[in-house]
Length: 282
Ligand SMILES: Cc1cc2nc3c(=O)[nH]c(=O)nc-3n(C[C@H](O)[C@H](O)[C@H](O)COP(=O)(O)OP(=O)(O)OC[C@H]3O[C@@H](n4cnc5c(N)ncnc54)[C@H](O)[C@@H]3O)c2cc1C
Ligand SMILES: NC(=O)c1ccc[n+]([C@@H]2O[C@H](COP(=O)([O-])OP(=O)(O)OC[C@H]3O[C@@H](n4cnc5c(N)ncnc54)[C@H](OP(=O)(O)O)[C@@H]3O)[C@@H](O)[C@H]2O)c1
Image (cartoon, rainbow, N blue to C red; front, side):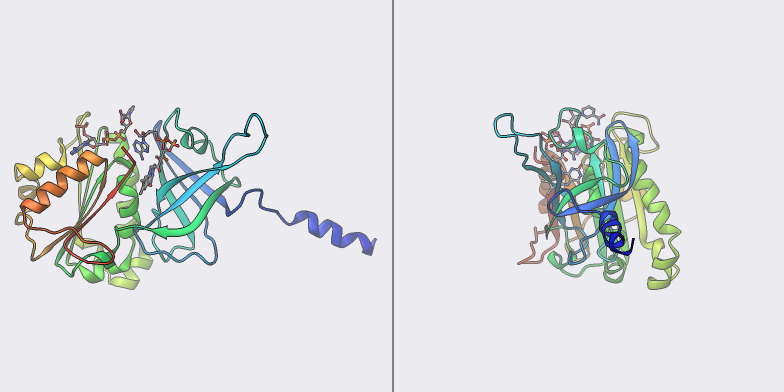
């Protein structure tokens, strides 16, 4: 009997089926196109809030060889650097090679997570300022979900303005819920003072479904409406810093507006007044 004990114990140890495997711990669906999930964090993974990593699943077996290759895509880490777990906020593209499968993950499943974080949406790439703007469309909210939970954001700035433009109201849910949870987060309040959340100004807008604030943020900047609504001065290179994450056309339009206002683009190697990253490739 005693000889059999080690065999039983060995069987109960879970062997990862994937390279760089992490285990899914929670999945939440928001719309038929959006979901978020949490997974375990590799013990050695260090990253700066706002960075992205490559994640994925094994692809289908090659019809000739039967071999499977990892199918990986860039994903912003939506959780902050101090979190014990990792969080991601994802699109579901019905015929997308990765997300047509990824949307079906459940707690206990494994995903691949390559532990090499990179990215430009980091505090190190910005010069000191008074007010930070986070400009997002769609899943471009993900890096800001990380930075909104990063204590340095509130240490470095007096005001934190997050704008999120989506087509429909339901697409704002993840961001809205997250900001609500930050406002009630006892741990962040203990770390940064009870009033830290008063620095957050949340400015959600929709473009294709009725909501309290309609329109593309780019148009609301051009017309001056966003500054009027928030009761603040227009963009000023002395005081304002910005991070942008959306589709390519959105990023380019905002870059043009910032350059017109006298802000310069920064990078890890050369901090300046604003930084940009694509939320997806096209
Ligand atoms: C730096 C970077 C960070 C990224 N971070 C995220 C993230 O945090 N969350 C996320 O969902 N995606 C993110 N993406 C996009 C992601 O890499 C994949 O494109 C996405 O997961 C879809 O993969 P797929 O294989 O299903 O389809 P793909 O073949 O990759 O894409 C198919 C088409 O779907 C559309 N699409 C792809 N991604 C999105 C999106 N996020 N929102 C709207 N339309 C999209 C595009 O039109 C694209 O051509 C990021 C991309 C980059 C470059
Ligand atoms: N969201 C959906 O319901 C839906 C459904 C089916 C398929 N898709 C496809 O999925 C892809 C991504 O859709 P998405 O809605 O996630 O992302 P998206 O097309 O990037 O739109 C997200 C938000 O950004 C706004 N926006 C787009 N370009 C902009 C610019 N240059 N300046 C300022 N704001 C801008 C959009 O406004 P506008 O509405 O004014 O463009 C929308 O409110 C698209 O190819 C789309 O055809 C989307």
